[in-house]
Image 1 (cartoon, rainbow, N blue to C red):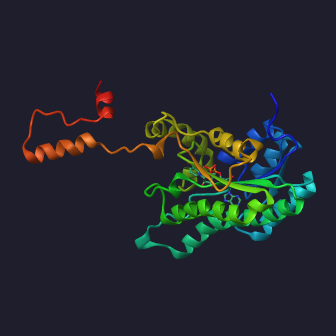
Image 2 (image 1 turned 90 degrees about the vertical axis):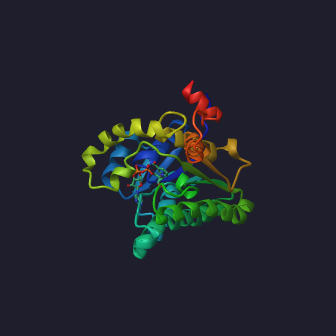
Length: 293
Ligand SMILES: NC(=O)c1ccc[n+]([C@@H]2O[C@H](COP(=O)([O-])OP(=O)(O)OC[C@H]3O[C@@H](n4cnc5c(N)ncnc54)[C@H](O)[C@@H]3O)[C@@H](O)[C@H]2O)c1
């Protein structure tokens, strides 16, 4: 089967772990050469050693503009250009609420999750414009960008902002044939949530394993997301199959954002109880009847 990214050069931030690592694996299988930018130097060098010369690691803190600029320059010096930019690096960041907000934590988190995405567009966009070949920018948002209650105002606001960056990028960059699209993961089997706790890194694999069952219960599709689920969406946006798509976002979430977990039968049952009505089945909906069938 033909490879979809043959001859393409991609940059992937946060590529040594979780979703980013899944993207690196799939892009490599599809013929791309990849520069990974991440703060985890040890894992980054190990990744290069494991995957070979088509994967280069460069220490990059995506909150530092000069690092992002240097990352793009590395793709050019190492592999001769840039076709795909994946803004993926992230962490849970500040988890305080609106009423007990840590304002500096908010700024640190939006720097990590939103400003970094803007920087990725700026430096990758400049290079792609200069090349005259166009290009594809893919950014990792979250279903927390459209739904509250999963994380904090800092994380949610940053991830919502990523959706708008892609629209603004479309306004400014589409004339240069540079596309920008966004992926919103559901709950994915990676160590990101453990990294927000005091758990020892050696326990991360066990944590991810232990997440399988609870995440399976939350997703209508019956399992938690895998890094490859996101990588396949990133591949679609990176390559020519999505040539006429820009400024868009897609939830890769096993159905979470499509289905409400509201128990309407319980609501109707409470109303019946308040009315003193007994002996009438409150489960009128098809779903409730399906469940009890
Ligand atoms: N896992 C999920 O359930 C989930 C859900 C929605 C969105 N996301 C988003 O997906 C992206 C990837 O998350 P993941 O689950 O793979 O997490 P992960 O912790 O497995 O990977 C994140 C990577 O980003 C790197 N990173 C962190 N800060 C960085 C910085 N300042 N500069 C460069 N690299 C940095 C980490 O070293 C790590 O390699 C994040 O943007 C995250 O917000 C994840």
